[in-house]
Amino acid sequence: MEDSLRHKTLVSVISSFATLGFLVFVGVIAAFFFATAPKPPKAGHHVAAVEWLPAAASDIHYYAKDDFIWWHHVADFRISEESFRAYAAAQEWQLREATNYAASLSLDLLGLHDASSTNRMGDMVPRALIYSKRYPNGGGTTVVFDRDKGRALYNASGN
Image (tube, rainbow, N blue to C red; front, side, top):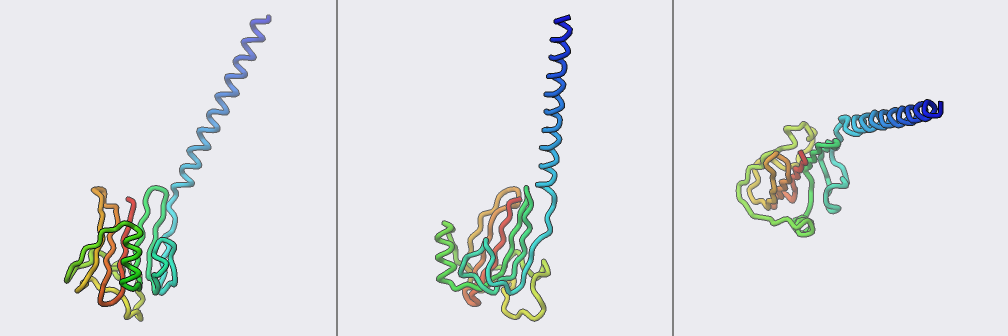
């Protein structure tokens, strides 16, 4: 009889641990799905500041998509060359100069410029400062500074 009671107690304990383990497993899976659920992108026109851009940036047009696994930030903003160079140095970016540089991404393609905006950066940059570090998966950072207009185009993603 004592063995039967021990057996029932052991089965009860094992059953409790199995139930607890199952509930923890379901909780972890649910938390993962909630954490990785797509979030709507953020975008703005003529914004004064965006946390992932230099503090000296102004007149910002931006798009930001921040998901658990994938994120993408794009912006076109006003900044002085001195402030841009200081920010690049703080980020340890090695800038290179280029003439007639074709910027590969325009915020116009994302529909982020309003029709009244005349102070934006075009696709062709006659005198540019460029930083680019891309990865085989397509992620990375590219920043183009237009020395004539005092504007920068920022494109960074972690995909």
